[in-house]
Length: 385
Image (tube, rainbow, N blue to C red):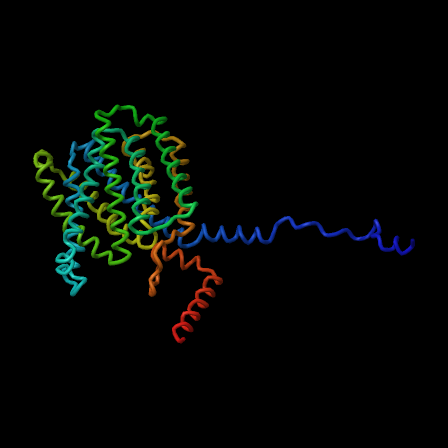
């Protein structure tokens, strides 16, 4: 009896320690997620994407100034100036490169491919600007998002890109941000005027979105497998030819009716500089990320245009614009936080991988490195046998 009583713990003895408030494994997981979302790669991609949005904003503001204040409606002339700048910089650059990287070899073997690319890019720019004459800004903002799923489908089949669940969720979040922005347009009264022939305008927006998707997929393939200079040089060569030919056909009389002043010339120069910077920087961003992430990042361009319009065109402000901007940024960060992968086997010698190579290097864990060394040793033993 005494032994039984001694074996029981006394009421005044020390109590067992309480369970920890934080699970160490959960803390480690949250720390990994935090480091993945707020890594230098995501921040760098985010900043570069917003830089592209500012360039697009510059083209939108200058175009609106030309159309509203000076009654200049020449989208093909504006695109022609941009392609001429690409020609003078990157096409001339290719002319001084020898061998297979030179312009003679590229034109001789790939001329028809880049001619098609020039047609696609020129018509995409023309259709999206022409659509504003027939449909509303809301329709353009909504239907322009059609290009994102089209781009993902093309990347799936052409680039062999594969996406994870978080990528699809991120796209939905970004589209919710666009929907919030459209709702803010209705509340602020920016859509008070009705547009004529909306069916034609909506069809032009959808066509432009699909053409942009084709152009962006081609751009991603070229800059990741060939060179950025080849893409921009060939686009400058054939884009100048195609846009110049179309310019003489559709805008011959419109150009003759322009009243040239130093303000009009300055707006043309501003548009050309912003478009040239956009075309020059976009391949750099696509090379370290993907065409899909770039298109998600530039969804904020309309919001930047609105902020400038508050001072330049007396737009009405709504708090929903801030909410739309935050939602788009959150969706973009979600997309960039996890790398996509390729269905094809990786090449033997590579520094960046097939897609999102910079992210894959940052996400490489010690376990994956150890397994890679193990596979290498096994392959070497098999070769010796």
